[in-house]
Image (tube, rainbow, N blue to C red; front, top):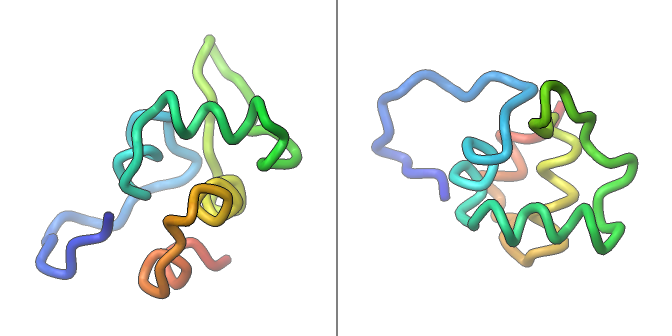
Length: 78
């Protein structure tokens, strides 16, 4: 989940599954399940055995998991 007091720099995209899961407030297995169930189209590309999540992919996954808040939506637009 996004913490308004977080002073770190904004995330860069594409990002790995671990960072993506942390950003939207879920676990890697739940995030991966959105791909397996076809909720993220097209699926994030795989490079060196790791999925690379774009803003669009993450927005789809967050929506499918019921985690898409207004703040998260604003971060993932674009």
